[in-house]
Image: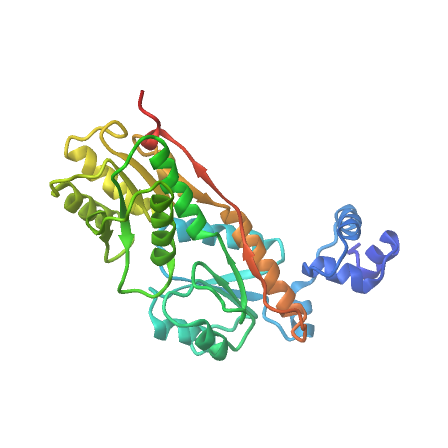
Length: 337
């Protein structure tokens, strides 16, 4: 026999509303109550009729995820975690690729792209927070480096601090000519700007002035761009002895070019990337990288979205959530005796 909400409520000794909040993933439930209700849900094998719930609530059960690049390993790994976490809420994720195009971002926010979703998680590269919130027709959560200015829930790592730690690690192993690969003056998404700021902060803390010759811009954040930037650095008379790349893809391209040019890594050139993608672990040598907690990014973003969807009239101000990161030191920057 199929269990009902009132059966779960009776056994758990709580109200039907409380059970409903636990099933829907609402944050407005005490943790001990949530655990108790979830235990009863599991014992009774309760399965919500998602279609009926959506119809009653005027919702579709679909949430959107808008990311700049599907082929990027970082965004692919993050998307997989969002889908996995959404499934626990009986949500289906509709994924769109924007390429950072402002018109594509606007269409998704305005709902003119043919997608009927209850809420949207977006990593914007082009439009401002003010325009973003003005365009949005559904609850929105922002990912990434573009700050929300207090206009929408925002989930990200502290890029400036993480970049400073990555650069400081290279300096701590005795390197003094540390290059940066990944400047993007043609874009306004903030990623490169924040990571450049952290890189320069670490240099200044070590008493080293930034050298424009060691700061290499790129068109995109891919392996090819990292290889081209590394080639330019190696053609200079005063070569770097270490490189901080703003993404792991850039670092992998730089690593390939350095080894192809006859350099030993890390003996002749140390390398650090950013993003913690799986490829970095299996590079040769394995790549040191800043690892954002991508699972927590996905879960915290979905929790914010659930709270806004289920409580549209809430007066809780938008949250600015900073998730943890870690510097995972591997062979590409290990201290050389």
